[in-house]
Length: 169
Image (cartoon, rainbow, N blue to C red):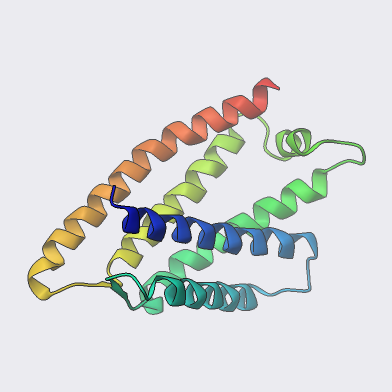
């Protein structure tokens, strides 16, 4: 993988971690942050990302009208899941045990699959934000569909393995 693409992907991953961290922290203080304000915060994180990747030879113009419905569902689901874990977390209990208590059995795998599927949907929508010449749009779209297909197949295995690892300890 070219070094520049690796850098963009690393910055993108860091951006997503920042967004999810913010949602989880908001779940720890319910009533202080609205869904609308979380969506606005994710846009600010996106703007920071776009400034960082501006030096790379790619133009990204995020089409929020397409992305926001999927992003909202993902934020809502992550927020609800974090609140569920935090509400069942007993004093002296470790994070793994709290997660197992909140999402017993196959529920954790289902949650992870759902969240990862929403990431895939958002990735597909975001791919159309990458500006390319008209002749290259079919190639961009095919590459995005392939990427999301890989994400889907890997996410199923990842969710299964992560849930199994949580239940083994």
